Length: 215
Ligand code: GLN
Image (cartoon, rainbow, N blue to C red; front, side):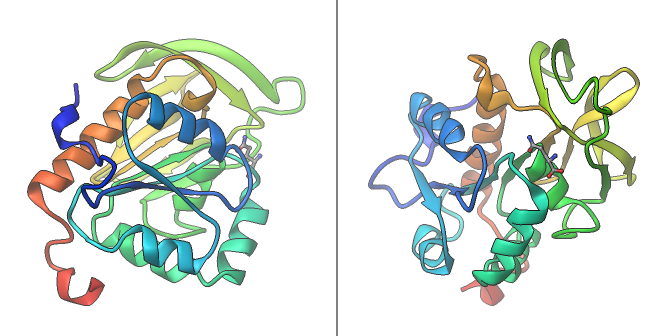
């Protein structure tokens, strides 16, 4: 699915920046390292500025699960909100899982044309596992923890998976989101899909129109 030769690898300038303000970032790091990708944790603006020095050389970002209200507050306090928003709008490939999905929606970073419904499964079904079809991948094990679903999606958003009629995974250009936690299962295929998006952006280069603004 992805080409290991085009992965962000140690020493060749590219890396996947994992937002590590709070929440389930370590599991994403472990999964990407298992797949052979270079990763870097982002705790503040300095980390961010060091992490993505060479735009267009196979970089990406992950916004993990956690608590979107807390993550939002820390992101703003650390001065990360605008730089991350700008980079994503400029084409940086990004994977958002659970709270990460919420962070990308219209009411938070405002980069993806979706509206997330938070804590959408009620108290009884707050956390559960299921297995459903993921477009382009097939049956995928899905772990939901006080998860959102996608309540509204604009015309540019491709819905990739649904559970009980609710959209739980989607892609819009450089943005891939899941309401569930692929990093908490042994199945690496969603991370591989994300790395293929990183590899593609490395191949094509990004951002296109925004390059001068980004540098
Ligand atoms: N309930 C959390 C929120 O609304 C998301 C939960 C998760 O990321 N596992 O931000």
